Image (cartoon, rainbow, N blue to C red; front, side, top):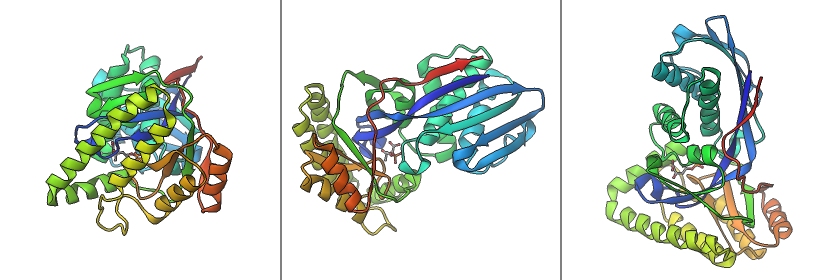
Length: 327
Ligand code: PMV
């Protein structure tokens, strides 16, 4: 039996723009997802995923090509892609377990994909470099979602803080420590792929506006990279608020506020009033989490709670993909 783990992630700067070839900054977080895999002699994949309310799920190897329930889709697509690429076939017993809720937008789908591929490479003794794990995981996520930059996959594999370009064209781990990061969950689960597609529709209507906005975000990402390197947290906070100012104007049809939302704006405002250096949405928007920077964590978290959000206590995790045990 092999057990591997990978961290969740939070987008710090550059969401949406990263889909259109601008860089972003992403941090891996100190809540992890675990995947255990062992071979079995039946020609089936057996799956338990307690957090997804999946127990004793079974699918025969011949049915792997069929459409699978969404709770198990990433694991099974990862298995299928791995088997195809390396010409392997075997029954498996798989168990996934997460320290974070799939609702937070911490990237459980990408973490489970990365862990599954790593576990399979160990069990079947296939040597895979980190970039090969990235490429096969990215293909798996694209097969299912059709869109995405892969920043979440990079965070799960490499850990820490990363300067990232879409598709892994650049994956640069940064030496940044002790970020005074505060996280608040909005209570709203957002669908990243739907929001990305909705923004694309808007972009097609007014590409000049969006291209300019993405270039402005690029400038913010570059400044934030330098400011974070210097631990200039008030400046990093100011840049978060500036990044939010651009995202706030992004429209997403069918969503009243666009990629930002009433609850996102409210949580950001109370963080600022409680003394945060700055705050912004993190990820696609509409819901999931907001992030803030500040040295008075207690007061800011209290303000998030009073405004109807849930503070989520996380730090940056410098450990990426990891083998927990190999028995
Ligand atoms: O919603 P999240 O946390 O998965 O972040 C999405 C970030 C986007 O830039 C909007 C999409 C992407 O894949 O980069």
